[in-house]
Amino acid sequence: MSNKYSFLAVSTAICALALSSQTASALTTVFDDTFNNGSTINQAPATPTANSASYEYAASQVGGTTSTTIAPGDMNIEFNNTSSMFGEVMAQFTSSPLTLATVGSTIDLTVTFVNTERVLTAGDAGSRLAIGLYNSGGVAPLQGQMNLNSGNSLALGGAKNWQGFLGQATTAGTSEYIGVRNPQTANSSSVQDLLFNNATANVAFSSPVASILASSAATTTIGTGTTNTFELMITLTGASSMAISNTLYAGAGTGGTVLYSLNGTTNGVINNFDALAFGWRFSGTKTNATGDIQEIKVTETVPEPSSIMLVAASFGLMLSLIRRRHS
Image (tube, rainbow, N blue to C red; front, side):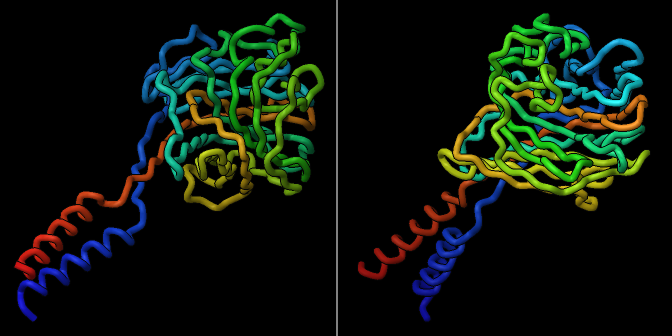
C-alpha cells in the first residue's frame, strides 16, 4: 500500500473514532462549605462565595432549647426538647445561578452530617430527612430564626416564591418521595418552609402542596453517632424534561453503602438554581434531636462536545489526499 493510501486509511480511522466517541463531561465544584471561611447562621445575608454562605434557620418551633451554631467543620442544629417538630437551614449558594441548558448537564447537592441525636433514628416513626435545590429569584431568606408557627408574621418575602425540587427519606415506611416545591400563596408564616410539604398543618408549606414525582414505601434509618451523606441530583434530559435522584449514603461522600435511593422524572423544567435547604423532622420520644452538618457541596457537570477539531482536521487530511490522488 502506498503512503498516500496509508495516510487516507489513518485519517479515516481517526474520523471514525472521533465521531463514535462518547461525550465527555466537565465537572465543576461550584460551592464547597466546611464552615471554615466565614459562613454565618441567622445573621444578615451576605453575598455567597465559593466556600461560604449565610444560612438561616426555620422551624415549627423556635426558642426554648433550640440552638443553631457554626464552628470550623461543624454547623450544629439542636431542636427543642419536644416530641415532634421539624427544622431546616436554607441559603443562597451562588450569586450567579447555575443554568441547566445542555441535555445531560447536572447539578448535584450533597450534605454530609452526623446523626448526633435522633435524626432518622430507628423507632422514631414519622421522622424525616429532607433536602432541596431551588431558584430563589435572587431573593435571600429572611434573617434570623423563623418560627413557622407564628401566624402571618413571616408571610412576605424570603423563600416564599422559591421554586425547586426536594427529596425526603422517612422512618415511617411510607411517603418517601421526590417533589416539586412551587411559589407559595398563603398569608401565613408557613410559606417560608421549603422542605416539609404540609407535614404539620398550618406550619409546613401547603399553598400549593408539592407535586410528587416519585414515591416509595421504604423505611430508612441511620445509627446514632454515624456520619452520612444525603444527595439530590438534577439532570436535564430533554428540552422539557428532567430526572431527579435522591440518595442517602453511609459515611462521608457518595462512595459508601447506599441506604436509600429514589429516582423521579418531570416534564416541567426548572433551569436555574442558586439556593438550597437541608433539614429533618423528629417524631418520637421527647428529646433534643440534634444533627451536626460537616460539609455542604454543590457541583455542576456539563457535557462537552466530541472533538470537533479532530474531526475537521481528519476530513481536511482526507480531502487533501483525495485531491492528490486525482491530480
